[in-house]
Length: 579
Image 1 (cartoon, rainbow, N blue to C red):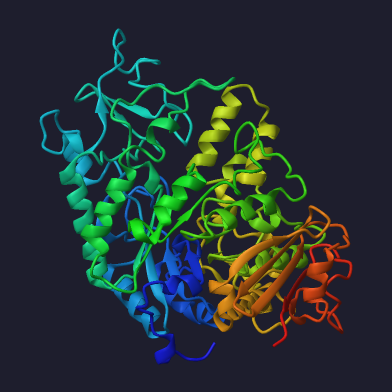
Image 2 (cartoon, one colour):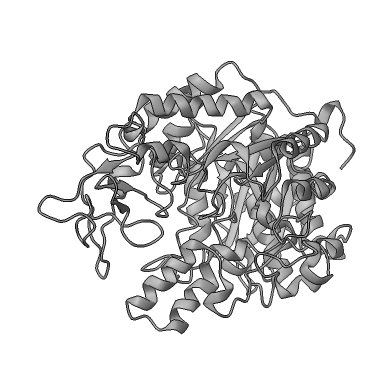
């Protein structure tokens, strides 16, 4: 990518994010600058050439706020400071200036459904029942007829996302507090207007500092049903599912519209992204409808929940076409209003080439096929660090090699309930969040160029083969293929702004679709399988594309194949209509 010039300065257009590509940095695992084994802000600064060459427009920074790190920074104890493990506010200002100087924007990850139990707000809240901030969190007495702290005395039967009850007994004030996630992550009570005002003031403080927007963690959980009713208990589970009382709650849209008025109105060139687990298509349309002024786009979870079995850690194989069908549903559902966040990986998801591709037999082909599908759909693509290199799930062997609180709690829960150790580990080997958190593989040296010290999480042993130094500049690499896809989005308006139409290619494993903007059309054909398949288009499609102009393929052929030639395992083709 060329050096930054006027055309690469951060855009102030109201919908600039439609043609943007976002790159997520998980700072702990990106680059360590001081040898302590943990990535940091100065390390990110050292690797900006990599991001600039890739061509991304936005860097989304996972939480770097001060935190006890119970959930790797998603438990914030000070919203207005940087945790010393990552650096200082001056370091963040330097990173922001460097990104802007290269024509990129910086988006902060913001967690306002909950804080750390070490945040001053919660310290005050738990100090006494009469404290003015008591109602900034959800406090409730023990269930009638029970003794606080005893099993079953919790105010509701809800299960935490991280296993166990969602309530913690506080001996000092003799009430329970709600924590949908870790016990050290108490939920904020958005019913309290003073709490909301404090959150909005903090958000304005960051925007005034120069950041370009927020990715808001589990934002659709902020509105709880005030009565906090019990949830249904699934077979084999001890606790209930309280999701109906806190997912897309009764005042969610009101709160988000208020946030928009108080924080975003009057400011140009920003992006506001909502992570929304359990969101329905109908809710997503409301959330992302520009006329409603709530969020610009949402992260929905349907496609990354398809392979969940009885639990996330008991996954099932997907049927041919199942992933494509889910993505198509969201493409069509948000076609007229709203906008898609396009992703397969992030800090909470295992590596896509291991999960949805074939990392053993067709590593390069499946990594690039999945990238083709992702980048050429309608929406804003998100690249998670290392995804542009085709990084794969780590070969963790024992529970001692894992660090993620969700994985450790799930393992303990499984073993305590009688699951064999090998079976409990099998689920983690496929689905643990730690697979996304192994250090980025920069080169073939010890610790993959990530650190000169002992890495906080083990480096993947395949880094000698899969690394940035080996791929940058190699036309047959995952990196350069991803770079070409990003350039295609920037070069052709049809990718960012065109419509979407799914095509029947005659086999469920073939995901074929057209993108159209006026007379400009693209045909995307991807074989999402490890076997060869013959596409079979109807005659009208064949007539349109028989003379199509090949733009991109992941097979590096001597001559581009016909658009309807047999597709090899994980083969991808992109054609453009001729002028």
